[in-house]
Picture 1: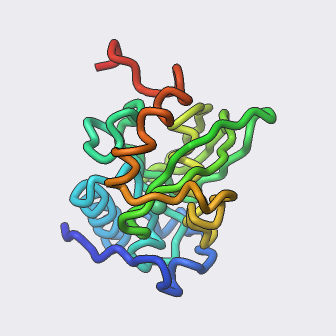
Picture 2 (picture 1 turned 30 degrees about the vertical axis):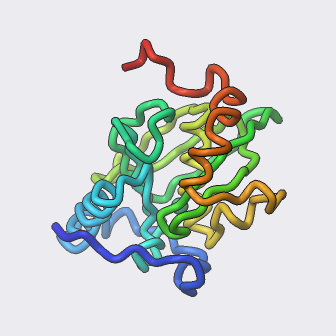
Length: 192
Ligand code: NI
């Protein structure tokens, strides 16, 4: 298991549309080792998710996990999920305002509009099909990670560049209003 280099904004590999992975190939040692690396890299960087494209591998694979994450303490927990060929479908018209960051965009956060509820379908690392309906910040995390597989970064979806902020200034000037705006979408004290 190895921690891989995470590519950053401006690297051309982040802008490609990744190919679906052949489920038959998934069980190979090479892909299983890659999946272990993807999870290790996400955890090492305290990411809420990481897409294969962010480490320069053009395959439709994302990892998601939220525990006690120092980067995102308000995010509801997500058990470790490894999603191969994920398909995301918005449910309804409702949206919410998220403030996102990205391991490939070091130091920056910005406000993005996301679908409030989405349906997701994917294969796990063994090729077994799963589906789920997710909402709020968890739906936002899925949308952010699936965007990576199409070469899209959160900065592309920031409609008001005035909302861009360093992490330090996010904490100083914007966090309180953001968390208040999230209301019951944020992790509640009784979830801990
Ligand atoms: Ni990202």
